Amino acid sequence: MPMLEVRDLHTYYGHIHALKGISLDVEQGEIVTLIGSNGAGKSTTLKTISGLLNPREGGVSLNGKRISGLPAHRVATMGVAQSPEGRRIFPRMTVRENLEMGAFARGRVDPADLDRVFELFPRLKERVAQKAGTMSGGEQQMLAIGRALMARPSLLLLDEPSMGLSPILVETIFGVVKDINAQGTTVLLVEQNALMALAVAHRGYVIQTGQIVLADAAPALLKNEMVRKAYLGED
Image (cartoon, rainbow, N blue to C red; front, side):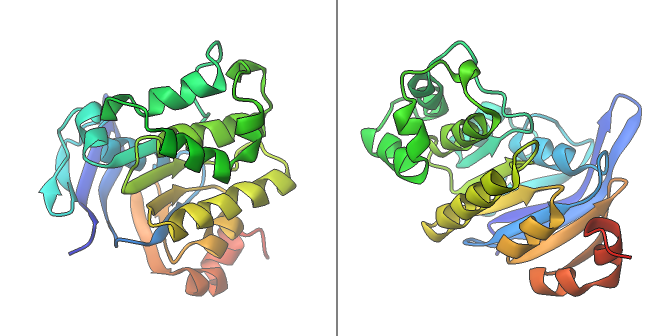
């Protein structure tokens, strides 16, 4: 049984039919990436999984238990944490306070979790008392991922972690994603930088206008002619 099962999801924004029958699986221990252009439905898929949006049809199951329809805070207590697109950190709070907010659903802050985040992101330890809004975009992205990890998720949803970052920082962030996965956290990664995403992922899905059009192992997708033309910038 897959850790995450998404079956025939139909999600709407008012009258706009955003997801049109999305189905995907994520096995425990994998990094799975969802790639596609702007507006294809990538972020909507993550928001539906995490409970921020309710599907009109279809369902989401985590370890065999149905989670679709549950409020987002309940989904979080079941082991799903999301690092959202645009980071959504609390700018007037310090780095430490932002991280502590990540543990809110668990009810307490474990110093060992803080230590783990600081080990993955030494920059955050250096900035622990700094107001989050004064940090660079890359540091804020580290904080958003660190905050999600404070919930000790079994499944981490990452939404566009490389957006707006320099190439060096993108490599740093994706290196940390691999480390997080190696430490036992399953990752579902939404990313416009298809090359980097497929370089770290085990498998990938390609989404177009709310539908999955291709699914394969990451190395196979990197060689796929359609993927190379549409998402890797090759003629």
